[in-house]
Image (cartoon, rainbow, N blue to C red):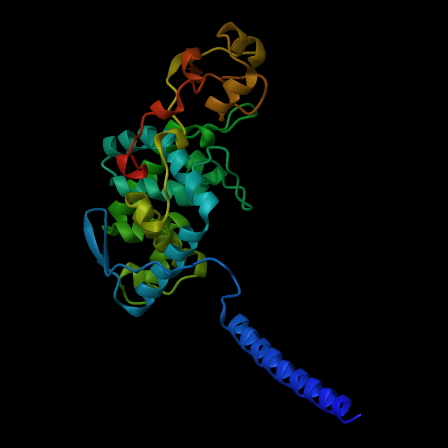
Length: 323
């Protein structure tokens, strides 16, 4: 029986040792698990530049409120991947239309980024406040800028006409302030509000005005889009030409008489009503009443409606793609 007792004692000792080793290893593994990231991916805060060039002027960003303002918006656009990529894809189609108009009206090219912020470059965008179009005009402001709004037409959604109207507003604001940053802020808040606050706060720099959060963020959002658009690869956006939306050439048809059936009108040019609406989003109805006005309707050219070779999409800004 002694040998049996020895065996039992030996087995018990081995079991205790194994248990100690197991629990020691278990605790170590749990400790390792606790030290691992909860999310198995890397998220890096983008570096904040000490300055930025806007409308040919250098803007210092080292003051605490400016540093933190641009940091917030740069982080937001950097990690709002799907929307930011879509903005660059649309810009490849719409910037070639917007830029020459800004230049013709002596408005700095950087204001094209204001359109990006206003509408996500969607010509049919509508805000909760009922502002509409690429430049988000309220109806009263649009009428003041000679944009037609009728039962069948809303020129706030006409890319060329609304850009010309935006230039008119921006020029008036610059004549008033002589400061492009104040002009940008006034586009969001209105000249009346900016003038009141500017005088009440004893004329501080535009970026140091105390304003409602939406307006305070507005200029920094423009800055953030400009930084990313000018160096997308730096912020993690990798695209090829085939990823961009190609500009589609159109023929122009001048119309000065009513069109009772736009679907029939479109068929004459071998396109669908939906094609006609997409390239002329200012057409509100299935008919057009000119009301003694003259309109230019864009007719997309058939041969350009197909992505036959997406790799040959014209690239408006070579910085947007990686070869």
